[in-house]
Length: 314
Image (cartoon, rainbow, N blue to C red; front, side, top):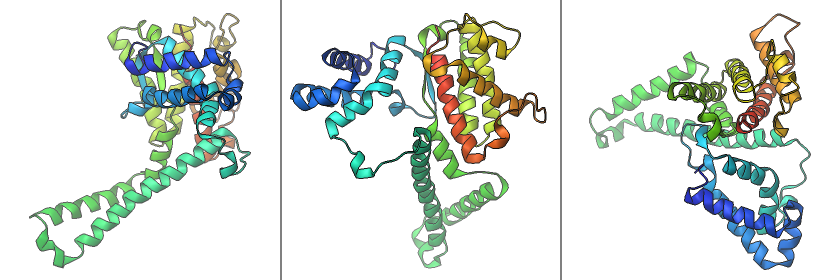
């Protein structure tokens, strides 16, 4: 889905570029133009559904990244997400803001709440399924309808489930929520091409494990790995130099992507210092003031920053 020559990506690029041309490359023109011209509205509908099938995360399994990805597709896809998806949706389906009420919270807060609501429903469904199994196993008059050994297997499974909860910090709701919040990363073809098979696998593995650590509730490990990945990307793909990470970020020759600006990169650096240098007030900043929910939201923000840094690399 990430190669611009794939049917889905090619269809998306074709329709997207056509719409951009008709609205003079200004997403602010989409809604008023669609109201006046039915053909533009139809094109918006075409783009909306074409984008759905070209969406890289829509076909993903456990992975939260893919490589190699064509830079033409990456730039177009991120531009669509950031600037065009909202107006296109409004042009097709109308303004739904009046139905849901005004919401003054920030986007990360709204995304977190939505993901948490979905996670609560998903985890509750699983818990209810376990309770249903328990209730049925306890009804001895039904045992004759089960295959031989079925009751024993289900009983052992329920015991194992209880053991998982009692002996670990397994948080099913949190896992569902954090997995939904992970931003999918498109590793540029030019970045992947600079590594041999072993090195490229290591790069992908480090990023995937940083994501997985966050998903499974190990935020400090995730932050530490994010810092390591940021340093490697700055050094190897932006040619930033300096005696330490702070100096590399401040390197005058380093020109970061707009959504991975130097202030955001320093924020990730300082948050990682809080993890890696506990007790050293000179290097610790930010982490002690964040509760569990606040830290989770901050990591999500910084994962988007790290994604922009990686996808913008040459």
